Image (cartoon, rainbow, N blue to C red; front, side, top):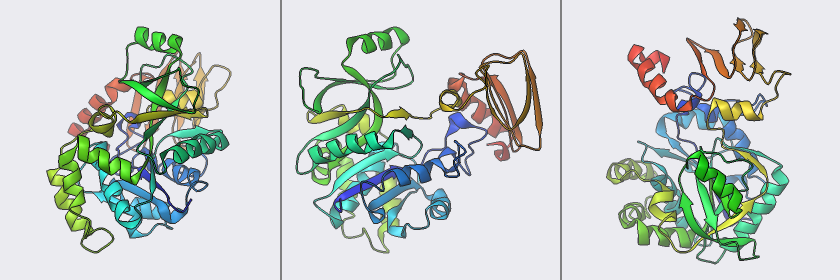
Length: 356
């Protein structure tokens, strides 16, 4: 377990949860489920069964350094990796990979988003342990694939070779968010899983994969080997990121590599990517409404209503709507209008940064 390392990616702005999620405090720092712990804290807690706390790293935007230390005060500065600018997920994986390699060449590295929800955590631990054992000392690049419960069009899919009875199956193809008809065919075929964006690999295999598939990125971060864990690290990283191209780890490495494998995740999971996905997992009233606040609902069903307790929200004759008051913004829209949220947020910025 001492050679297991976890990297939690916590740099996103959570635009699809606007206006509750704001640039100054995005959703990973919010107590979205009302548990008393933010999504980031819940993710950190989830991995304590698999590695020691000192082996958990958070990679985030430099502007969130204070929030990370406030919510996870047990972390040292060396465990909070600060990106000066967003460059998608490939640099966010390369930076900690080459840093951890300097500390522990025998490391197994787990990469996970900070804003996912996992239920049945004992199954999560078991599935992840299977992947860790397979990754240790091998060249396998492993991803957790979630057994799909419905033909979801908002997730990526992984097709695997189903003729193997092993727990670790070779990946055949990746498919980004498909149309509904194709998603239904994926479910019917039985050899597709959802891409959860959780990766497991030995530190040797991932750094070699960067050298093979994203050579420029590998060279940039390898040059910092004498700077990691020193006072010179942040200045090096600030300069390194100006040289990085923006590319995802999926597109840059996983979709190109031949040594990609999948372990089925049999736990309950949500990527919590939108108000609609949060509605799915929250407790509901007899009319399928989620009410988080003080509200009176009339002829209202399948809605998400959220506001502060000192404000009364009254709705009538609504079906499938989001109604939320968050600080200085009131938002009323279709609950499944997640593709509009970037437009909402950009237009709100035009009204003033205080609304973003």
